[in-house]
Length: 392
Image (cartoon, rainbow, N blue to C red):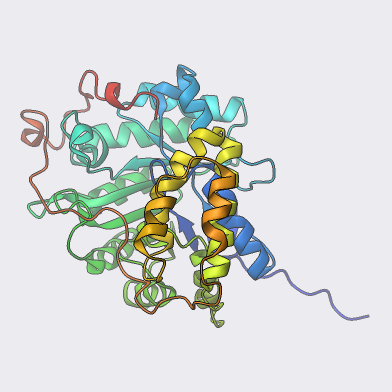
């Protein structure tokens, strides 16, 4: 009798979670809902035979979750077969962090909790939230500690996602990475831009390398890299250049939900699947619309698919009239009719890669008055810091 075959080692381990692929979908507001995640997982399963990466739900607000606001509970929906279920929290204080994480544990709402410390949106940072928080070391520590305390004794790992810092004069990622590990975080993801950059310019992957070295000196907690991964080859280069344990994909997958199959293959040393021709892209677009209609209802689902049209058709010769029609689609039947006569054999365009979605320009980060005065001792969240984000 031959010896049993040993189980393949996981490509990425986040606490008790073992992933066959070191690829993570970044939470994106209004994008990474259950419809989009289901679509990505279906494509990966069809092309790779299984679902191997981690697909994170769009960010929800801890306070709104605890208050059981209907919109937030709807955003936190997972597919019946979705595993692991990954939920990202926006939070600004230890109290609501603990309450939300405890609710997730007690009601079995998710298998993984990520905490957002990277949002650069002005309405968030000016109230002391998102990427402003890691500058307040004690506040940051208290939030991570609260989430870990709430999940003690469970198989639910807590991770954090952050930026390099507020701006070039106020880098926070090395201290934040160390603190997160000290408080029990099981992975640290870094978007290699400052908040001041927002999504402009180029991500500085050397900062990921620095964090890998910094965290690696004190623990074996994995560091994940994020920023400017628009193709499978970008992911390979990031791993080679930085030594990061995994990659987090945001804007690069907009209109390209098949990217995760390409990434999984290339990071496993295999040839990536051929990008789809326009006929297959049209089928994927319809399936996306169908899933959105199931999640939101047909009216809202069709309004939601409109923003994806330009991303899906980037570089394809679809014509302005067709694009205008798709950007105003109202029903699934309309969507099917508009997609039906696209040239099915048109190959994926060579210029279909590159930056997608928001980019904008760098700008000064809006912060509460006096926020930069005391980086070490102040552990107080600003009153109302979560108000504008309550509900997700």
